[in-house]
Image (cartoon, one colour):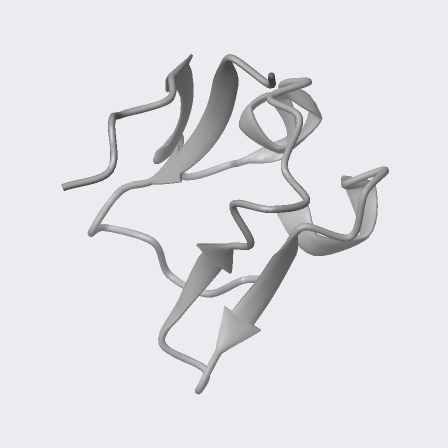
Length: 66
């Protein structure tokens, strides 16, 4: 099971820089408002986190489903 995932902070400015760097195509900009993560595709590699100029993406342990 994948143990890490990207989390997008509420301060995301929807610049889209993270989208093309994701090797699993797990990110997209939703309605021009902010980036969102497809939890089924994300492997927590950290490439999006390193590319985020606004520093609002973090890689952390997956949270349990509620």
